[in-house]
Amino acid sequence: MDLSIYLKKGISIKTQQPGFPEDGPLSPCLKIMSTRYVDRSTREEQLVSPVGADLARLFTHQRVRVMFMETAGSGITPWRGLIILDTKFIGEGQTKYPYRIALVAHELTHLLQREFNQRHYWPSGGLRPSLSRRWIGDSTNYMEVLSFLVGWTVEHDIIASRILSPEQTPEEHAKDVRKLATIRDNLATLSGPDRRNACRLVLKLFPRISVYRKNFEVENRTSDGRLPPGSWHHWLRQMGFSRQAIDHIMILASQGHAEWIDLADVA
Image (cartoon, rainbow, N blue to C red; front, top):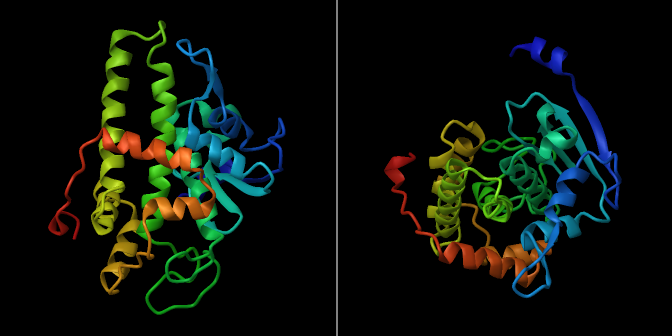
């Protein structure tokens, strides 16, 4: 571990207070996620991202501790009430790219999951000695599936909202179109009926993330794969997401092509 990086970039802990205050460490993202626009055809106000708006609503009255430190661009939600983001996410840096907004949405979804506080399916992340699992920060790959469903949908919505901009070059437009198609394909796989296949997609896309690999190894040794009873939309509803937001994910997923990931490809 190169400690000079931490000394150079520093570590700071801030608290996101209720109501999206101007100096809130997550306020830039939460405000973008709850943005509205006027539909030219109907002249009615619409949400840019129904899923993002739901997420912002769910955290309107909550306090969240946010730690900024060197993470190589990733996010971490080790336990209840805390998320860790890279120093690049300080201030407006978190809204510089749609994928950064998506990552914040992903980690906030993990916070909602941590509140279930059920050690087998929904671990809180707190200290729990175990012979087979992490003592601190335990998680499951199904938790990742749901967080990616939320995060990637938010990313899709943000990109889709800018794709008709007259300021886009043909190259930028084509890149965004390809990205939207990839996201819809991933959503189709994550929301498919085979939840173990959805978990394998997480491992296939991010083979270098050791936490996902360790989760996969633990889950392969359990009869239920640490998959809680119920569908993905049931659990998003339990977290507080609206039916409108869930229908939106379903619509996007229905436009994609699901992928079957063979166990041999990730084992």
